[in-house]
Image 1 (cartoon, rainbow, N blue to C red):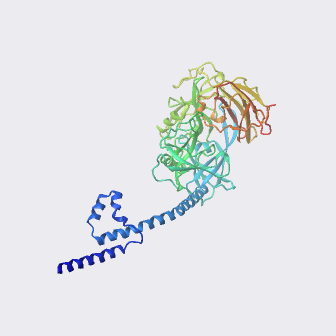
Image 2 (image 1 turned 30 degrees about the horizontal axis):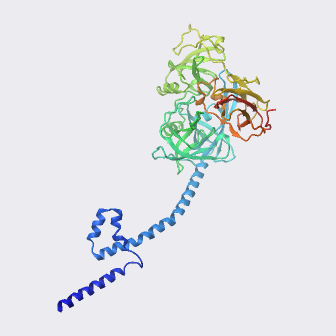
Image 3 (image 1 turned 90 degrees about the vertical axis):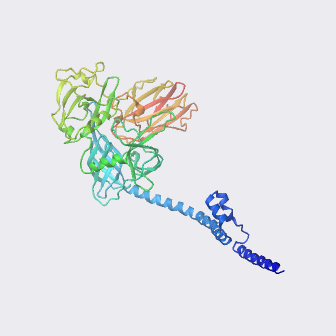
Length: 566
């Protein structure tokens, strides 16, 4: 009997303990914490739970009650976080805009036939110091006689001067009048494929600030072009257009990853346009020297690789010479073709690679043997950079127009050698000659002139040229029959110093015609139109390619106020 009472006593104590334990749980809740170790498959936590006493399991259950509250709070904050991130991005890009500049250059250039012409152009850049030091591309400012800068989209034009340039790295530092400017800083993190970036600038000379987004698509890309030989290049897919050159490529926090300098439209089906920028490491190293007034990998020319395979001639076409530079002291002139440097034949594949490799292999004050052909006069000259001036070693008036002989070899010539090899026939400003009717050759037309017609076989291409004269905007409308697979591209004449180009797919274009509605009312035709800003007194090329399977017939209208081919 005493044993029964003793047992009942312990049972009562146990029931009280259980009731107290259940009282800790929320109403209607299940003790999920005791089963959590099994769901998460955490063996250590499971072992601890099995070993815990009843009062310890109560603590675990109490913690489990807090978890839904934490999750609900997190969900409530997310929209606010996104909004805050967008506001931060907006403020950051406004800061980028305030330090991004539009540059207008007034230049005097010499064609390869000796014709001197004025050309104005625009580009972009960004300020790196509050004193007004700014970075841009060499090809934006080189050859200029004066430079005007517009800061952060403002309408007030400011004067600027060139502090230092690098012909090979396509970089320049300019100094804007005044001080107290906002400046951008360099990105210090890892640059990798997939890094989100934004391209800032003023494409096509538009004074409205433009910003496009993308990612770094290639960490290391090729940097060989006909105007530069850049060693450190990245590829990205943030759209840049002519006029974006020199603008910054920035991260989401507004720090500079690279300097935009080129886009390549290979005009191949399935191949997208490639956008390239000079990577931070190369750019920053060169810029530190430029801002101190030093020219890097430069002799003082506005140069472009010139290559005519048909006439077996190549070299660096000198479009202008900087006064007082190494090239000027050697008596190199605008329109000259530098054929060899230190006995290296230049531009053998249509790029600046050999020229820049030679400069990079020598100190700036080294004497370098140079061989030049002056196409306008037919003179072959030899001399040295940082040494003896150029002197005529052969004078043959036929050299500027010969098309049957071969040019002198890349080796150094002697005064007795005959320069009886050909030079390319210079491309002169066009006249209003009738275009070829069936494709091939080079036709010409005038803006605001008469309509013209042509036919183009499947896979064929046809080129035309025109001069802008005093026009600042051009409109070309083409009505095409028998196919809608016509491509029409417009090129700046300076980018094609001699026609036909070796590989037009490597030449950057300034615009591509787009397919539009059919405004001539003919159901059998497809309308293509290109309209865009152009530079005054400048030569342009237009290229037609028939990608369709049938012979195309087309009519081209050269004025915006007419939409029929009558």
